[in-house]
Image (cartoon, rainbow, N blue to C red; front, top):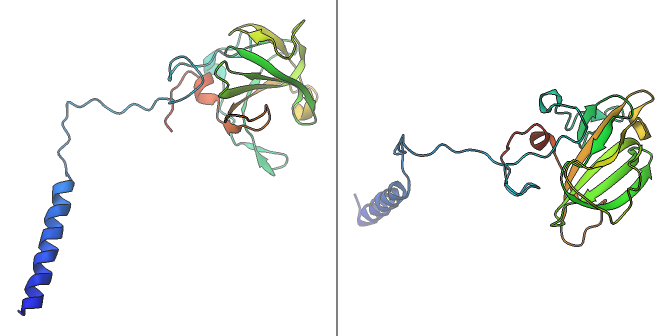
Length: 195
């Protein structure tokens, strides 16, 4: 072998040794704590704490994940969790916050947007039959406080009574309609989720 060949071989061996020193194969201890996925940065005091179920009398186990189900004849995905309930069932705040916007829209019908105290989250309540007496923009609400009633307004369809609950991550300066949609199901169902 030529001198150049020996140099190339030495470089390859050194690179292989350096790679092996930075990598460990099968050395994890069986006594290490298993990784648990939690909802880092979710809208609660504890990162893995669930939101309150926003429809009175509905159990967590009854909530079904409808995130990204086809809507509009398959033209768009569903950005929330639908919670069926009888017409007029009280809708309650899933978390504390400030009523940022009460709004009528073609899709959501009668809606309420409540922003978390740290302003990082919007809780969106849609298809309401109406608002709780006295509910107004700028009002502080606490978890469990009535904010409206289950309805079928907007594109819900006549007789399709349910609450559409949405969750949006907000950036500084964003308005009530500008956040990034996040699947609320894991927090409504009381399950932590990874990022």
